[in-house]
Length: 107
Image 1 (cartoon, rainbow, N blue to C red):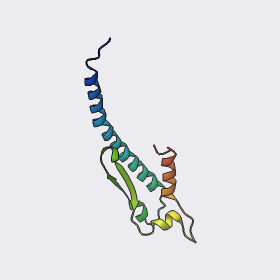
Image 2: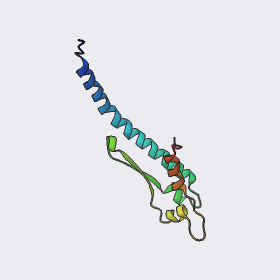
Image 3: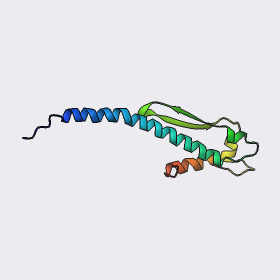
Image 4: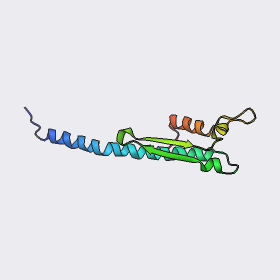
């Protein structure tokens, strides 16, 4: 019979490594993807006065495996530019970027 005396210590060390590093890596990845998403939306945002393009903001929240990112714009007319109106075609800067993210093209 073979005995593995250090197996429990090895498992504890590996568990500690995962517990410490994985949540931090998740937070970093969420932050990175949120910033990339914001940049792509900004690039796709049309410019007239620049107010809409300057209005894009990010918000990071949660810790570890519950990390989350949010990209938003509080300029009152952002929805009209995104979705269009009876007189203007939609630009879809947010929707197109979301499609890129879902397809894995946002790297």
